[in-house]
Length: 387
Image (cartoon, rainbow, N blue to C red; front, side, top):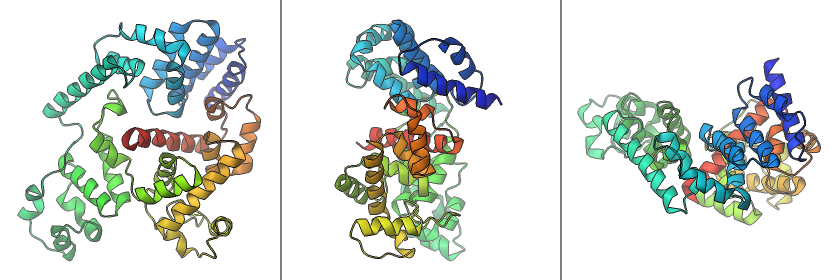
């Protein structure tokens, strides 16, 4: 019941504020904050209310609240765009100079100044130095792989055939014994295994190890501060040339296509769902046949969907089709990929604007809302790491 109240309040907040209305908003904000799961949204819409009321300082603080809670949440990224607007950017930089020198204050200073300003660069560098010092005394996440000559496999008896394959560096063929020699309890070795599995084509296995290691990172450490080598194991860009090529041909965002594949299949070309969806982009055969025909690809079979080139080509084509149907690359495209086009159109009909934040706040299915949040959050990560 509480979750329904929260979602209903967020829905009404979005409806009111995108139309410039503030009547009843204070009570709706209280209700939105009364449960879990909508903290970033409540902070964002409070910022919008403050902007309408002309309280720019409160607007900036509210957007910062969303960003410090979860920097890559798509609603938080909308808050970042508001902070970068002509109306707020100048005032935001004035407020930035008064931030404290603790970790949160440095992170906020970086957000408010941005990467292009010397003070923003300095704040992030200071925060990263603190992270490095802490990692040196109490390891949080590894940042470099263990050298081959230091692998424990050389000091262990090689019993199984897979042990010998691993000693030859054949991680793809020996994935079943990797954790025996690269245990999760030793982060440097586990990180090494994650990287090597990814490079060998066993991206899903490498990603799983990275996600287990990531659970050790305290929530107080913002994602952008975590060293890039480790973040790249969490957001691998396998099949990069295929993804970029297919995305460019169809005028879709390569980072979005990569994020979608990460969510759908974890980059496993043989992934199969309970609904018989297959491949990197998880298509059922009837949809794949229709898309392939429209692309002039000829007849395809279910087994063809396990071919990365075919799966990625169809994924890019479908994203383009959805973008054309929904008027651009907004969150409705990702919602439609998960919940179907008719349902995504229903949520679009409830919107008074084309703002991504409004649509995100009006996705009615919990599964689709979380799915859309994860994909768009991953897209922001891919943009930061690889663009």
